[in-house]
Image (tube, rainbow, N blue to C red):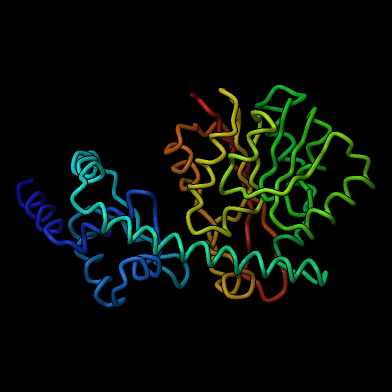
Length: 321
């Protein structure tokens, strides 16, 4: 036990490693993000990450060709991590690191938005998951809602609504459905589709799903949905935190996304940032926002040419605050 503590304190006796810990306090990051934020070489940062890992302070998780790092929230580390979070010693340095990370992630989001705008405008968007339609999955999604939530749902928000598929699927179970997206071309297409289908209780608004202040004017939600959205973001847990702000006291969050896979080309060709999520990862995101996992559906598989098998799963969480 003493040897472990000595290793822990030795790992923290370095400015760069303290900066890494301070970055990870806000959530998991890829090694590339940490390298950029610290403005240091990858070999040097990797050496510091190895030391932190060996000291039991962080966990390194391989995901395809990338490695993600997160704090090891073991009880024995919590006191130290809490102290570091409150410590103002490196405040200016930490702020600079976080600003570099913020600028990087903002640039990536802008690039992704440009990508989606071009694809939808030219009407050849072929992300294999967005083309995936499965009646069995749709039925399971409706069943998990009917089973756990009193219907009709008063107010439903579909964040990153895209084609409006979730609005169409759940409009008959809801009084009001609001889709949110930041792509005007997508919004125009989705509105047209909803009008044709007589989904009169649905509306789509322009908005940034990473900053929900403007959306709050539409009232509190009984259900917030992220359908095939989280894998586009560097820090998916941030979206869960934003959903929390929109929820009624006992509102629900429905996440529909990939299970972990090895289709690396989805990053390079279709702006995906994460190669899916394992079954416990979403539960962990929920817990950090004081949302409890109440139900999930069995994974649904689909195959397409030249793509390793992909599985889609859904998790339903409930706000307990």
